[in-house]
Every structure is written in structure tokens, then in C-alpha cells.
Image 1 (cartoon, one colour):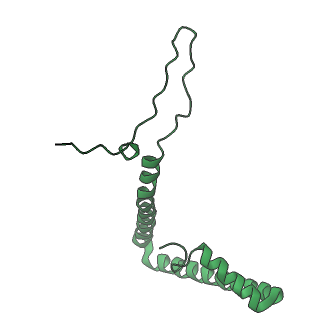
Image 2 (image 1 turned 180 degrees about the horizontal axis):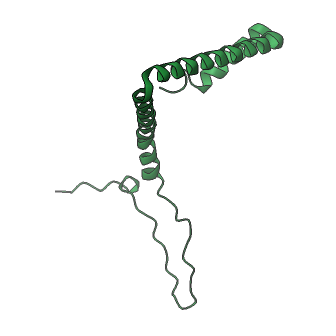
Image 3 (image 1 turned 180 degrees about the vertical axis):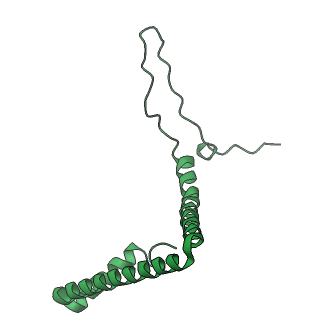
Length: 127
């Protein structure tokens, strides 16, 4: 699921455009300021709740929260792993630096990697 609550960037832009058309520039700007204030207050309240909870739980609670944060970071890394693998499988890495050619070495043509999906289909055996 991409975006917030399954709403991606395209949908957010459409919602913003509709709000702009309905409310006009003055009301849209006021609504955006109010939304920003609401988000800021919500974040402050959430941070306050987390600080209070960590304070009540003591040292063990802080260690548990740290472990949860580390686990969350690892989960994010694992979620990105399939995308990274696909990028590497589709586009092989390009070497960052090529060895310098010497005058004595003969020119060698580099063969690009051949992927089975790029090859034409083999003819079926004839009887």
C-alpha cells in the first residue's frame, strides 16, 4: 500500500485540486494552515505520550522502545530489499571506474551480459 491510508500522490493531487476549485485560493490557504496546525499538535501530543510512557516504564521501557525502533528500521530495510533486488536484476551495476588501457595491451571488445529473456525462442525439434 502506497501513500497515506492507501492514497497515493496522484490521488492527493486530485483531492487538492478539487479543494482548490471548491474553496477558492483564500479558503484553500486557510484550510492548509489549519491542517498544518492540526498535524503539528497531533505530532506534539504523540511525542508527549511516548515520553510519558518511556518515563513510567523506566530503563527497561527505554530499552524496549529502542529495540522496537531498531526493529522498525530493520523492517523498513527488509521491505526495500525486493525492490533493490529487482533493480539489480534488471539493470546490472555499472563499474564506477574502468582500468586504464596501456599501449601494449590489445584492444578487447567487451561482451555485454546476455540474459535468457532477451534471447529469441528456440525452434522446436522437428521429427
